[in-house]
Length: 251
Image (cartoon, rainbow, N blue to C red; front, side, top):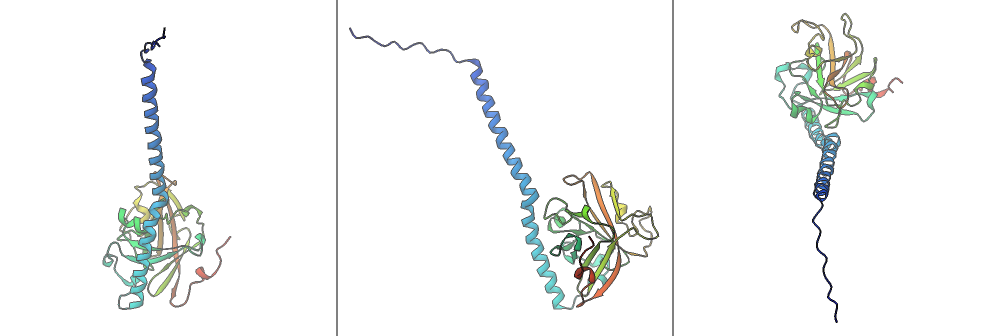
């Protein structure tokens, strides 16, 4: 007699199976979210630099062509309200940050302006002028022009190239004031960019030719602002080069 195989009855599913499936699904979602977050962070830290690099190339090409073409006056002779937003106004060099460090400074500190490079606060002095040439720059994204702002030291030089001049500023305490060469302030401390920095009266008439850098502090945070002050110490007419660019930075 042929034996007939009897299929055993199927057992009811365990309640824990559903939880395990749900947990696996949640885990996969978390892993995917983590990967997306890492990709976004990588883009913010490095990918945005490709955009800024392209913008800087375009700005430098444009500004050099304008300088060679003649006709337009040197930016140092202009009124602060005559410079169009978004245009390149000068080329920035910081010997402490390396011989290849240079950025075209853009007029404006709006979001789109700072994506293109360090931005000049509208209304503050222009390169070489009496007053305070104030510039903001990113520290961690968009090619991070001020990434190493904290490595700058008292006595370091900052050079601005315009159509006809090289303006050399030296980082130092501002003479005749209580303004130190370096400050860490609240994001709302706009007085650091006044014509006379840190004075209670923003309309106080300036007498010195100053430069101020501001950037976020600490790195990867906008909790505070890192501020550097400098004073004009040399105005070199082209085609001569300033000694700050031809000599080795102090150790």
